[in-house]
Image (cartoon, rainbow, N blue to C red; front, top):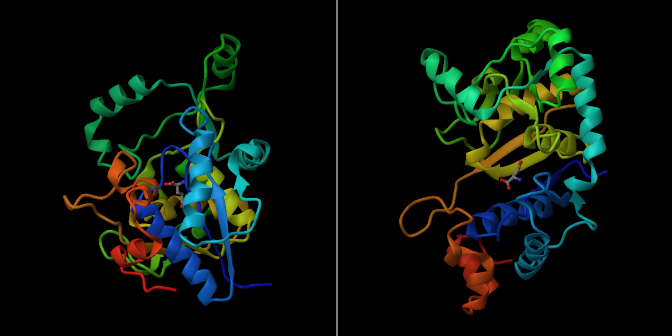
Length: 291
Ligand code: GLU
């Protein structure tokens, strides 16, 4: 069994750009160097924003870059039942609660209590209050939608001393140079949503579940997701999975010095390819030595 398994996990909500190419190439090279496995995972739980044509483009772009991956790629939209089961585990442990609040209600509460809300990795952190069973039942009966939040205080009580000892290893560096063994502070997320009203799951839950189930040992991704490891480390512990090693990499910036986003059309791999660029040009631009 290879002891090194990594993955590239794009969301098909737009065309891949140079930043994605960098991430995919680094992960692929790391797997090749370690004689390990490279997986591709399509993170398409957001069924309104994800489009089949973008998924198709991911396959084309990665093949053009010279990458190969184990087929078929795991598609998260085929695993909603698994994410439900993972949520059930958290519910049974008493660390998940229903949140019926609308975005607006939450935003208003945060504004009323500004001292509680320094910026969190996913926006201002919010800590809700679980409702009494009777009240929940009446809201459900009247058809009110709800999300599931992870209660950090319940998780802290459940895990006891182990909560304070939660830590992960960052072999690359976070945006402020964070590296090495890092104590996890999941509370920076407030009580995060782990199952959204619309999709019934979340990036955090699905990604952790998949990385664990696919045996991923090394998570290689951009620094923009560095803080997610603080929360993911807790979710791994609650689900009884080992935490992988993280290797965050720098973000690729455009000519204006700003990090690339899916809306930067000129930097998409497709646009670069159509303008006559070759795979080697991409490797040179990304300062990745030719293979
Ligand atoms: N699907 C996420 C994205 O496209 C990446 C998730 C990850 O690598 O953990 O930003």
